[in-house]
Amino acid sequence: MKRVIAHWTAGAGRASAEDKAHYHRLVEYDGTVVAGAEAVEDNIVTSDGDYAAHTLRLNTGSIGVAMCGMRGAVEHPFDAGPSPLNEAQFNAFCKLVADLCVEYGIPVTPQTVLTHAEVQTTLGVQQRGKWDVARLPWRDDLRGARSVGDFMRKRITLMLGGVEVLQSNRPILRFGDRSVDVGVWQVELSDRGYHLGRADKDFGRLTRAATLAFQADNDLPSDGVVNADDWLQMAKATSRPERFVTQEEIDRESGTAQDAQMTARVGDLVGIGGIAGIATQAKQAGEAAQAASGVMGQVSAMITDHWPALLLCGLCVTAWFALRALGYSTRRRRLLDARENRSLAR
Image (cartoon, rainbow, N blue to C red; front, top):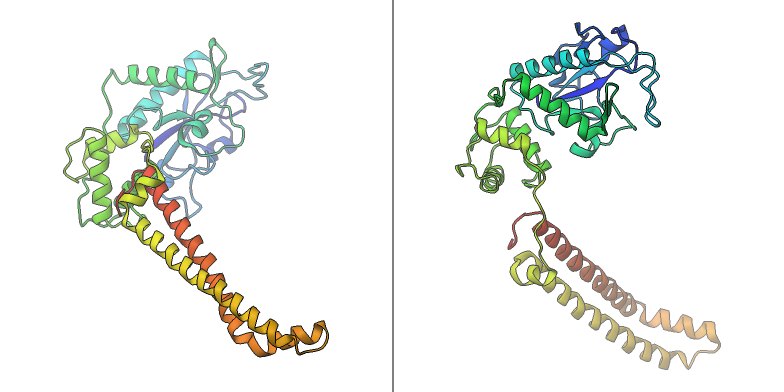
């Protein structure tokens, strides 16, 4: 499991059957912890349809926990409704999350322990106007998803005694490995801007290169081997910043961009030849058409006598536009690649 996502049920202070179907653990208004209908492990894989559906597009690898309450709550102006959360419930909830972090080796970071309201802004996974948990009824000074989320994480960290949780349940990965965990590592690298092609669960040359880049950027030993420290840093890492690279630099340094420029030049030659051919054929056709009577007769004579050459010239002009467009799009793709920290010179 990669993260814990905190919710409120938007129901009464006790867990209903529907609440238990959606969350792995629930904390009722008096601090009682209730187990949900689905095991945490059911969310390792969600393609089988047997899992707790608590967060849109983010159920895989996510533990869903909730505080029972906030039925009828209104965000603006804030109204907690007839079943508000309370501080004792919140403390029991934070203790539950701390225990889950220890059990599943999940570090306490904004990316790995967060409220439902933080999901869209922190992880970039769009939600449907969810604002749980963005307010606490007994703390009017905490307003907004991030302030409540930071307060929750601080409380959880205190309950852990300040001990940093390592992702010790993650395996060591190295070149040549093939496994589901390699696929997870590849997705994590790609999500943070370390591009390696398709996540194929094969720790090959591109995955090793991306791993080395990640380790170098994060002051980790650059050995290409993924251990507990690498998994922990990955959980904290944000997207890799784009480099400032100009099109001129790419055209000068990149072999692919230079090939694209050559393609465009060939297209220019083909196009110039096509235009010249069209002009020549039009001149000859015009001379031949003078003998024909009427406009339709002249056009018919031009097409009948010179259509193969005109068709060839037209194809040359079409190829010209196509080759120039191909060259331009290739150069632009290389520029985007370089700005996203892919190879500058390839």
